[in-house]
Amino acid sequence: MNKGSKILTLFLVSLLVSSSVVPLEARKHHHNKKSKHQKQRGGGKGSGSSPAPAPLPDYNQTQSTIFNILSFGAKGNGVFDDSKALIAAWTAACKIPGATLQIPPDYKFLIKPITLNGPCMPQLVLQIDGDVLAPPKVSSWSKSSLFQWLNFKWLHNFTIGGSGTVDGQGFNWWTVSTLYNNKKKGKHVPDMKPTALRFYSSYNVTVRDITIINSPQCHLKFDNSGNVKVDNITISSPESSPNTDGIHLQNTQDVEIQHSNIGCGDDCVSIQTGCSNIHIHHINCGPGHGISLGGLGKDKSVACVSNIVVENISIQNTLSGVRIKTWQGGVGSVKNVSFSNIQVSDVKVPIMIDQYYCDKYRCKNQTGAVAISGIKYDQIIGSYTVQPIHLACSSQIPCIDVDLIGIQLNPSSGSRGFQSALCWNSYGKSQAPLVPSSIDYCLRRGSGAVRRIARSHDHACY
Ligand SMILES: *[C@@H]1O[C@H](CO)[C@@H](O)[C@H](O)[C@H]1NC(C)=O
Ligand SMILES: *[C@@H]1O[C@H](CO)[C@@H](O)[C@H](O)[C@H]1NC(C)=O
Ligand SMILES: *[C@@H]1O[C@H](CO)[C@@H](O)[C@H](O)[C@H]1NC(C)=O
Ligand SMILES: *[C@@H]1O[C@H](CO)[C@@H](O)[C@H](O)[C@H]1NC(C)=O
Ligand SMILES: *[C@@H]1O[C@H](CO)[C@@H](O)[C@H](O)[C@H]1NC(C)=O
Ligand SMILES: *[C@@H]1O[C@H](CO)[C@@H](O)[C@H](O)[C@H]1NC(C)=O
Ligand SMILES: *[C@@H]1O[C@H](CO)[C@@H](O)[C@H](O)[C@H]1NC(C)=O
Image 1 (cartoon, rainbow, N blue to C red):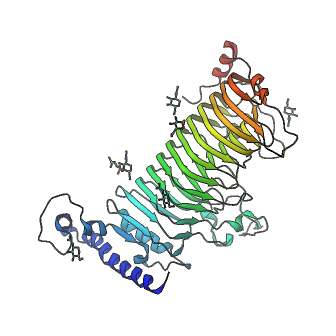
Image 2: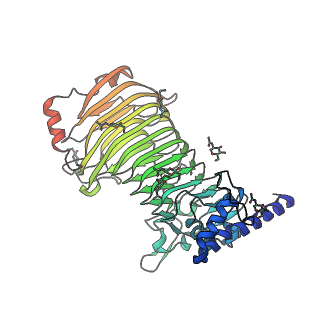
Image 3: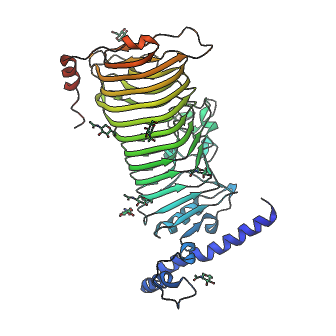
């Protein structure tokens, strides 16, 4: 930014300061509140005399809903701790319907782990056009802050937008050599690593346009939430960064994720227990682990996932393409899942069900499993490097109503020693074209007895 535009920015900022104070003042003077509000609606501040009730766009009214973080003491130099300024701006904006909290472009705001909570007046927008940076040193995170960096809680009708970047600066968390001070355990990297952005108990929230990079762990998480939209965002962290999921959903319903680019070290999208009505489309995924349902049913827990649609997406250079993974011994069900129009390129195993999921070398064999039924794979096309299909269903509870339609998977050029399709205890039907032809004989035909076994395990989710 040159000097001229800096001065212009400062000038605009000072304008915003004066205007953003108005609604606050209006609220401070309680007895005066109503008349001031009416004044603003009528003719905007200063004019006062025009009572015109016409709902024309009122420039000053719009201005008075803007809260710029720089007006609340932020320095935006990437070094000064701007957390207090962000909280102050949030507190002010939260009280005004239709307010916008601005994180302006060309500045870097260092923000410590914070919670921005509601309830707020509806249609609050957090407009991130600048850079928001997490503390880069592992040791500067307190033990109680390790769950997440930016925690959005109890919000309704809330939007995050803008062309800015939320940067978790996670490099130090990814290497084992980084040490963390802990009196009891000595120096180590804590097991729990923060999620960059987390929404908790929030409804009708939209996250659009922004870029989220280099989270210590998960980039964007929704938990115990509903009616979520994610649109046109970019998520990126190195392929080598461990456990860095792109988007993580848990106990969250009615979600649409679209038009986004996600590449990280773990799942592009991870769907956990309690999720239903999830629609993912037009996204680019890779590198990473692909799109995953699970791991579900860990430690004999109940898992319920249903009504998932993943369509019109492309996946490159990932461990799996579309995957369902469950631990042995779990309870509950995964049902009514559709994966269609998926273009894969250099994906190790494009289609995978793994009911023997284990995150260490060996896990104890357990009885019981999360029951899997109604899984459709339709038009999954492209290249794999290890195995086209791997359906390892529980030996005790078969997967039923698995459909394989128009699967065309060829080994990547240069890959050698690949394996043929595997289906274990998987029942359903397939429909040509099917490449390689081993897919054709993979599934078993379901019988009434098989259905009865599967259904008898599917009651924990009602
Ligand atoms: C908006 O505010 C400015 C100064 O704050 C004032 O000059 C202008 O007349 C106002 N516009 C309207 C439409 O009220
Ligand atoms: C959210 O917005 C909708 C539509 O504008 C409104 O009906 C609803 O009451 C709002 N919810 C909250 C909690 O503000
Ligand atoms: C959800 O929020 C958006 C934007 O904040 C708003 O336009 C819409 O009316 C809200 N819908 C519901 C059902 O609350
Ligand atoms: C997507 O987000 C970028 C900013 O990151 C913006 O420039 C672009 O206009 C957005 N696209 C749409 C269709 O909204
Ligand atoms: C399956 O999921 C789709 C998409 O969410 C939904 O429209 C449909 O009603 C569901 N089917 C059943 C039987 O629940
Ligand atoms: C996905 O692509 C199919 C086939 O082109 C189309 O029918 C469907 O409407 C698309 N889905 C979305 C959500 O755009
Ligand atoms: C679990 O069962 C499988 C198949 O019966 C067997 O091959 C494997 O060794 C068992 N694993 C353990 C850890 O007991």
